[in-house]
Amino acid sequence: MSYKVEYTSKAQKDLKKLPVDIAQNIILSINSIKEEPYSYVKKIKGIKRHSLYTHRVGEYRAILDIEDDRLLILVIEAGHRRKIYRKY
Figure (tube, one colour):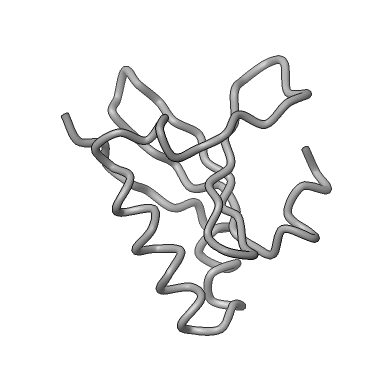
């Protein structure tokens, strides 16, 4: 069972700001986890209302929301690990 990947407008803007090769690596990495996403992500601690996950791609991270009932991986944000966790 394969999950579908969607990007929020914020994630699309984040990826456009990154260097092309890094943005491509993030997109390829996210596409490669569609079969079994929970094996490649870590849950972000401190969020009680809804579980968000982080996916590591070198020095960069993607913040994901995984919806099992719709088989959807929603990419919320992408960026350098130094700045990405400030909201969470």
